[in-house]
Length: 269
Image (cartoon, rainbow, N blue to C red; front, side, top):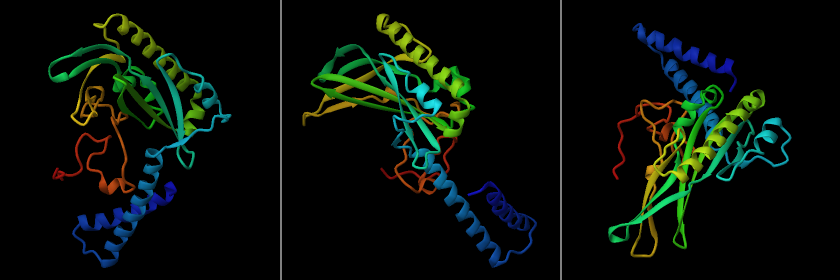
């Protein structure tokens, strides 16, 4: 929906609101106008938001744009980048994929094993590299872990969402930021692997507890690797953010960019 059209519809809603605020009687047509304009705007907003949230198409490897050709060459022995785009190709998601090295293992009571693995403090990327904040839409994170033949494998993905136009315009600045982030990840990972008591600005050690259930499957407690949002979190950091519904606005009670809930509703389980 065009910006001018949105402004017109919001102005019409504002006129009705002003009449109500000054105790002037409302007509049935006024109420219908608010409903119609509200639905029209919110549907367009929701469609736009879903294009940003659900970015699943892989950016073709033969893409000739400068931002892609420069960023696609960045990697090190601990992490690399992958690239996705929205269905309308207006939005780009760049993932930092980090293999979390295991630095210690300790088996305690009831066959519960404690592992210490290296972890990226996702919110610190924004505080350490403030240039990102003015260019991206949001950062989110995801953690995955599994046991393969008694070998624990843990991965963390940090997702950066940009508009394609911003990537084109600020290609050099964004390229330099990603280079610096990956360089710090590499440097601090090597440091803490050698000195387990060290701590970095982006890399820290986090604990994972696992045990084998009666059915033979593994229970892996990796919540210590995740960083939630709170009132002090920068609005561009959205934590472990997933969309499971196409009705985002009406089914969401906690928006990641807002410090408070939009509803007092609590799930009965």
